[in-house]
Structures are given as C-alpha cells and as structure tokens.
Length: 614
Image (cartoon, rainbow, N blue to C red; front, top):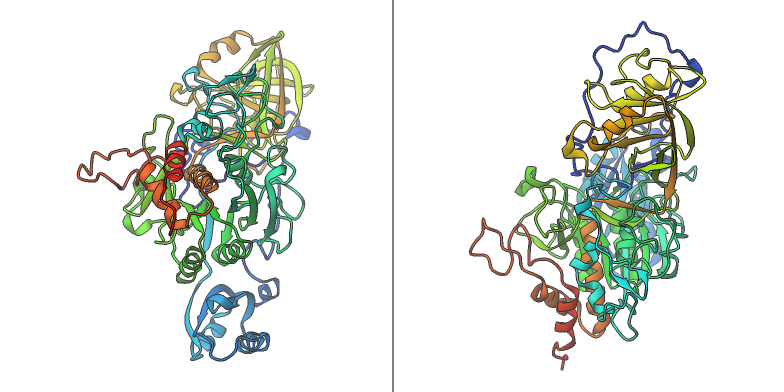
C-alpha cells in the first residue's frame, strides 16, 4: 500500500514521526522460529521509459539525456511540412523527439552528449536546457483523523444530516457562497463554480470515485501517452493518490459519498464536499506513481489545458529548477486568459531566495502557501515576496482512490480502541493471543511465541526501525502487530511508516495513553483488521493550492464575463490579510501570507458589484 502523498522534492521530512536509526545489535546468528513467515522483500518494479521522461528508443544509447531545445522563430508559412522538416533535421543530428511545441518554437529531445554538441552548433538553436524533474508538493500524510479531541472537525447539522463541511472548507468561506443559509445543501441560483473549468495538472485521478464522477470532463495521461489519466502504473497498481486528493478539495460532490472510516466519530458518513462543487474538471496526468515527472510533460499539459479552453490551471507540484520554456508556456496561458495557481513548496524555513519553487515563482503564476487550522504559518510552507495567497494546508481531509486508505479495527473482548494503521499493510483481519515482545529486538523477543500465530505488542524505540521490529516478531510467528507509542507529542498524528519493500502483516499503532491498557491485556485475545477507506488526510502546500483555485472558480462563476486580471484583483482585495510581524510596513502583501487567506464569500460579494466593462 502506497502512502497518500509521497515526499516530493522539497517535501516535509519525517522528523520525529518514527523513522529511527537502523539497528546496531540485532543478533545475526539467530535463526527465525518460523521461516515460512519471514517478511519477504519486494523487488522494485522496473522503471518504464515514459516514467523516466525519455523515449524508449533512446534508452539503448545509455548516456542520452532528456533536454529542452528552443529554436529561432521559423520564417515563412508554418506548414506541417515545414514542422516535419525541423524534426527530420534534429533527428539527422542524432536527437530523438519526445515532444514538439510549434507555438513555443521548441522541442523535448533525448540527446547524447555528442548529439547535444552537434545540435548546439545549429544556427537555428537558441538554447538547450535539461528536461528537469518535477514532484508532488504534498507532505507526510495520515489515513485517519489526528486523535486529539481538540482537533475534531466541526460539523454543521442541517436537515438532520451531518454536514460534509470541514474546518478547512469553512476557513475559505466557500460554503457561505453556495449554502448561505447553513442548510447543509447547495442553494439554487448561488455560485458553485458552474460554467467554469479547472484543469488539474497532477498525478491523475480515480475516475470512478463516486465524489468525482459527475465533474470529470475529460483527461489526458502525459506519462503513458494515452487518454486514461488514472494514477496507476502499468500493472494497474494505484500510485500515491495525490491528484485524487487535490481533485476532491476542488470539486467533491455534496450528498454523494464513498466508503468512510466508520470508527472516527469526527468524520461525516457522507464524505466531503469540495469548495467549488459545480466546476468541470479536466485531468492532466504528468506525475508517475512515485509522484515525479518531467517539466516537458508539464509544458505539454499547460498547452493542452489552453487548447481545452480551461479557465483555471491548478498545479500542486514543482521544482527548484526554473525553465525559460516552462515560463513561456505559462506566460502564453495567462495571455490566453487562464489563471494558473501553483504550490509555493514545502521547504519551509530551510528555503532561500535561490530555492524558490517553480512554476509558483513565475510572474504569470499565482503562488499559494499554506496555513494551519488557526490561520497560522506552518513551518513547512515556503515564503517569499512572490507569494500571492495562503489557504488551508494542514491535516486536510479529501478524496482518495477507492479502498486504498487503510484504517484499523482494533478490539479486545468487543471493546474498540482507536489506532492508526501503518502504510503498505494488507487488508486482512486476524484474532489471536496478545504477547508482549518488548522493543522487538532480535529473533527471540516474544515469550511464548508460536508459529501457530499471535498478536505482537511492540514498544516504540530502542534504535531499531519499525520495519525491523515487524520483521523480527513476524519471524517468530506474529500474524498482526500493535506498536505502542512512547512520545506523547506524536499522539495526535501517528505518522509511522514501514515502507513499500516488504510483505507485511496487519500493523497499527496506539497512543501513549493506551499503552497501559494493552500491557494489561497481554495474554488476552485481540482482533486486528485493516480495511480501506475512500478518503484520507494530507498536509502540504499541495492541499492549499486547490482551495485557492476553487475560490477563483466561485468568483468567476458569479461573474463569467470578468477577465482573469479582474478575478485576480478581486481575490487580492477580498483576501483576509494576516500581518507578518517581521514586515510591519507591509499592509497589502507580505512574504509569509501574501495578500492573505482566500475568502470566497467576500470575493463573490465584491465580484457582484464589480463595475461592468464598457
């Protein structure tokens, strides 16, 4: 099972959330009690040629590299024959063509150093630059709601049905636009984003998710070069779910829901609702199942969004490398009347002026940072003078590929206990005797171990990774594992990880407050089952960006005749300004919060009285 959002370039580090140093004294001479249960390592799948951003025919050359080449504007009529002639010429120099952008006078090519040297001498060539990597800008994620009661999502009661309005949605005022009476449903005639199209350039989407089927208006997969933009690899395995999560923030449908974790009383059984549930979604897949892609595919996707007459492009991805060609593509999109929103990045306090994230840092792109539930700046969210807006980006609940967000059913004698399923664990259920295996050090750490099976209780700590703890107790017969936390600061979000390289048993973690309870139950039968939800939580500027995109869609649906510049002006003047103490003289825009927190109701009210163009 893959985590919801992989740690992308400039993503949040694991920190103190359970990633510990490798073991230094696991006894190598010990033999497993149950060899047939030893966790087997999974072989990494071979990378596809498209996933690496190179043409398959170029791989045989070994040292060929993906590059972006800009040409001098072509004189004379731009006929198909003339364009083919340019392609034939670069091929004759040893290049292999991946993309050709006539409107940008550019190509994405696979070049050996020798071919690059020959091409650089061509008087028709203006520049050659790397086709660099871009990554998803989501951070460390959890499938289930943070456990502290103070973090419970407020819910609106309307018509006897629990609302799908999350705290993050309320912070943007989106529900106040299309549900001004707090009735818990869309009010006819209110702006919902209808008539507007948002192009989500990301990792693809679960096209059959019940919350998103109605708003899907078409897509393109630029990773696999087909018409199916689902976040899957060649074997049909789901990727990180990043694009599905982003899409739900924008347009999840009210009154329609998938499978919700029933063990969390803070979650609405009706799922969630997006900030602009009336929009049409175009889906451009440019990130592979590891959350990585190439800037050439981003450029192609931007052109596709323009061609498909989108109004807004939402990009929760980026790179620390800029590209003149990418900048030009976004400039052309802006000139065509589109608004492009992009994540500012998750490098946080370690970021410098030189480590801005692109495309967010381009002048023609709107940069979006994150705030937490109290509208405060989280340390991961990158700042700078280019920042335009902030939006909610911490513990954001949204859609996820169906059945792929694990949650645990943990019980003793019929009593349920809240816990947090680890990633990459199987959807299985097991009931057996609870044994205390201490810190899980070595292959004889579980007294009374039997290959017939048991549930292992393992303490966190001891300079040994969670993966090695699970391997050790599994080799002694454990069919399920409970990890007891030892750090109260991590109780709110047990973001522990095993990693994908193993055939794990069901594993879940309990808070420090529950540790005494489970130690007292050693010897009793425990039932642990892992099931899959269609929703998950995630944190990052990736989550803030679609909120800002959706608010823009609401404004534009209220006044479709407005230009993109007018919509942007309205967003700037209606944002909730948050002062930065380090810049007391800044009263309109600062480096930490930009113009402020996007506010949908205030923006729509301003749009409705905005002067009509003569």
